[in-house]
Length: 396
Image (spheres, rainbow, N blue to C red):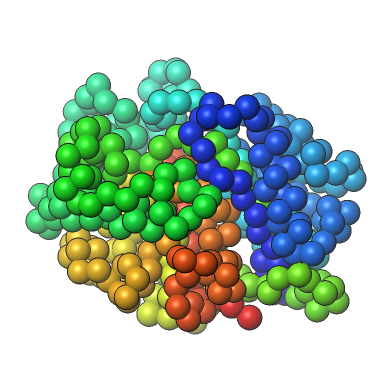
């Protein structure tokens, strides 16, 4: 049974503590927008997977109750930075498996200011779920007094530079592109435009990554209505449903750790495997894709993901972004929303917000950031620890 995204909605992503709202306020705003976009009511929804990382158990119910008290199942989902796409995957599986005809996938986060703790939640790295990942990093690069997530991705960048000759300017070109794209996104946390020199001149967080190459902590929510083909045909839906052509989630294998490389530890093998599964299931390839929303938590991860998705050969990603091949007028438009670097990164909401952007692009309703003629979109969402989710969408 096919599954379709019938409606999407999201809040603006904002700096934590920038306004007085609770996580349930965010979900009410994003969820209501998605339902209105689909032209249905909460009473039509049969199940709700809802993702977040930094709230207590059953916070999903507290948030969903703002949309209605109908007694339907609510699933609380946590999969690190891949939480939103995991909630969406559960929604798709419920629909494709025939367990429900209409499911609302939601992701939200209300975060604290400052850098993430790297998965320790204020505790000991030895007991962290990502202790093995950071152990690989420390064995090769040591452990410095910089934010740990910036450190592990920054060390991946160093390895890429040493192995392939990737330059700091090429890393900065990723951030410059995404900041430029976000200038046209009213939902983006940042809408300032910077050039490569500005990016390079910003404060260094962990060499070679500067502040403007790192995704910020953010508050926000996103939601997507996922429906069966039968539901879409029987109901007069407000928007144009977008087909979920294929979707795959992978977790770490020995490939993540055996090389001792941070490039592998931060998830490139997971991403490559998820993309391969999606291409095999759909019969489509990266050459068929027009627009991509991928997980640029740091500029280096966008380059690593180009290679994992098959957009270029290993080591060629810096040249690809520098050539303009991943912006308007190039072969693909990557992160027209501004990506995590500039749109923002409320962990639980990110994966669904990526799909919201792709739905708007494939409907042709993305305004000034519209990718001309976009018919196929790909979303990539990854979390350390680890999970990688790749979703292929097609206009109907």
